[in-house]
Amino acid sequence: MTRVVVKVGGRVAAASARHVLEHVRCGHEVVVVHGAGPQIGAELARHGLPSEFVGGRRVTSPAAIAFVRRSLVAVGAELAAVLGPPALLLAGDEIGLQARPLPELGLVGEPLPCRPPAVEAALAHGRIPVIAPIAAGPLNVNADEAASALAIGLGAERISFVTDVPGVYVEGELAERIGAVEADRLLADGAFEGGIVPKLLAAVRAAQEGLRVDIGVTEVAA
Image (tube, rainbow, N blue to C red):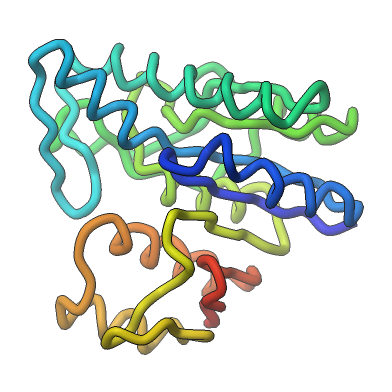
């Protein structure tokens, strides 16, 4: 049985159910990690709190962390409801999702590979873990990085990033495949900006650990 991690973006969380269920129908063990970027931004704005990013990570103050967590759990609950009874919502900070603190960004961390027992137990009982990516602390973590770290820690064979764009564009063209070396070079040259930067970094990390990786239609290879 193949173990697959599916990372879905906050913009497409509920609409991504078919991608998740396709893997389930193929007999795979599926772990879902979701983002909530737009929802977090809107929640912070409603409370007069700014949104600032550094290298794809959201600067998170003590005042903001509760709203970040609330938004993540709300998106996870919505996605779990769409996936149906097999889905099990798990908050990362309650199941031992680990991260290295990045105090220069506030209550933010860099996710570390881990194998949460609650995820293994859910899979063993035929459930679909839906993980709200907030680390113990609590620390706000980038969802792409969290998905990659979990995929590595859980010994997954594949990680698939589902987003609101069809794949990775290189010089304006949609790429069918991008190698880790080329991706690193393009990242270093500043060829990408915004949310694709942490996503591609996370994808490269997983590929280098031997996982099959795709961002939309683009294969990311070691």
